[in-house]
Image (cartoon, rainbow, N blue to C red; front, side, top):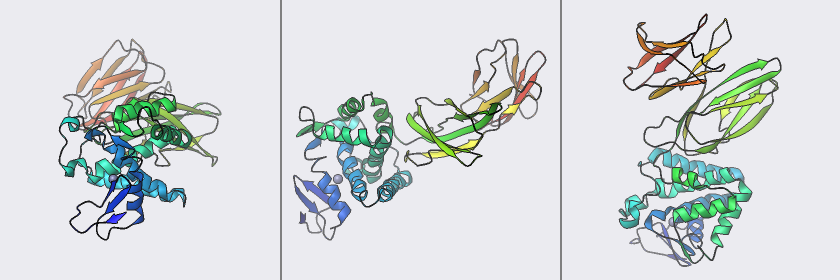
Amino acid sequence: FATANDEFVWGGMENQTLTTLCYGCWNESLMVHEFAHQWFGDMISPGTWADLWLNEGFATWSEALWLEPYNYTNYKNRVLNYAGTYLSQNPGWAIYNESWIENPPSNNVMFNYAITYAKSACVLHQLRYLLGDEVYFEAIKSYAEDTANFKFKTAVTDDFATKIGEVAGEDLHWYFDAWVKQPNHPVYFNEFYFTEEQPGSWQAHFLTNQVQSNAPFFPMDLTVMVAFYDGTDTLVRVRNMENNEHFVFEFDREPGMLYFDPNQDIVLKQATTLLSVPQFNTFTGERLLAFPNPAKEQVSFFSEVGFDPDAKFICYDATGNQVLQLTHLSGNKLMINLDGWKPGIYEAVLMGKNTKTTCRFIVVK
Ligand SMILES: [Zn+2]
């Protein structure tokens, strides 16, 4: 490597096996980063400026990987540092921007550390979680050794996604389309509750909810830990491909708590997971559950026994005025659009022939 004088404006730069460093900039992480560019940069170059993240993501992620032989925690802490940098400095654009193909932006934008380096490294870490270590490392090795398509050639994001998917044995464009091409990150506001179906048989209900307004939905595999009253716990993993999914897990011991993403595998997120309180009809044991609650754009009501087609569904505002009435109900999920609703507390009433089930919910704007 070579050390430049203070007119060199970059920290370090890899130039086909001659790494240049800024004056006084010798350090292990920077050298690892530049060495990694011999594979991701020199050996496989980005097809367009929009694919620059394939260089900097891999080089930055490699800095973390370099720490892993000492201790996995060192690797993970470095990744969490990247996530913290991104979350606190996110300028709000995506990692991949199609317009950069024809019109690359200024260096300040294109080489923005929070996005092109830190967030891209986190996207690779999350890919590692999604695929598992064995498949992930096999996939990136296969990508780097693919002389027909990538090695000593160039790579674009979609072809990279196709290649990783081929090795993994499943189409993974959904992951890259969301996490690389959409700006920002998911803000989870999940809920859960437990029910005892019969003696000795419990269900844990997990309701996923993303509330960010600055990006569409982010699909992902979600891990939850369910802890039981007998002191044991278990991990459950589900693939969450649309918003407001309702997952039900069956257990033969009583669950006491549910934790979302207990290992912080999804580092690019903000998350709140609350115990929701289903409202009971004391007569029939029927539950009516509003979700999400508080709700912003829409609210769904779940009835575990299914809505009676002869029942009426009525919503009242806090002053007792009826704001909605629905009849001819069906299924066990009822979705209501909250366009035009004022913020406040509402009461939903499901009026059957001889039954009345109520549920309070909050509308925020
Ligand atoms: Zn770099």
